[in-house]
Image (cartoon, rainbow, N blue to C red):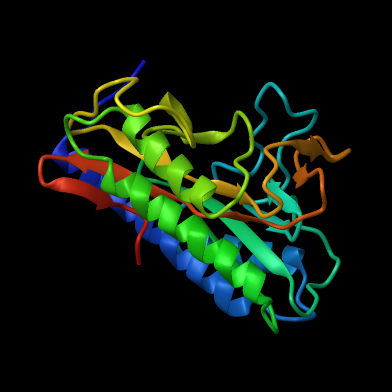
Amino acid sequence: MVKLKTDREIDEMRAAGRVVARALAAVREAADVGVSPLDLDRVARGVLHEAGATSPFLGYRPKFAPVPFPASVCLSVNDAIVHGIPGEHPLQDGDLVSADFGALLGGWAGDAAISFTVGRARPADLRLIETSEAALAAGIAAAVPGNRIGDIAHAIGATCRAAGYGVPDGFGGHGIGRSMHEDPGVPNEGPPGRGMTLRPGLVLAIEPMLIAGGTDDYTCDADGWTLRTVDGSRAAHSEHTVAITADGPRILTAL
């Protein structure tokens, strides 16, 4: 069921969104050659603790997962697309890292993701990341009253395809509010003018995921969580929590 939020509730969600933004900024600042993803998870947990917030990721177990997610942040490196579990293997020079993070504060959730490189960046990786951010911006620009979910999906997909990138089949964004995942689903590709009409008070997590090799296929690691490109090409992921308002889209997870 789709749950519209009041202006006051959206303001309260913004508080959770600020925690998400601070944590992702701290993770990005701490990431360096020799630092492990597990170290970065500790950084993210520290931001949660300082804010008095909790993690909607830690212990989360949807139907597809064999075990609960064991960390507060998803850290997907190089050919990992999403849902990477932080481990102890240190980051290497030139790695591409996607960090996806959520926070629960005052009964409301925030969710966002960024992609960045560690050490010397490959030009191809920078282009991939820039396109993921452009696709996110296009999706957000389409998130206005009177448009439809399909308009967001089309804006994201058109940006990705024009650059020659793949879009993981079946994955996309979602509604968000009291819980991290609410109705409706927000596909990352599809025809415009279809789906639910956007109304003020609807809050969405919009999150394009791109595969550099151009394929839409993926595999899942033995951990039951990490999605990985089938061709070994790199992936990028960008996300914001966005409220639909009469004055246009309001990004709740910006710094």
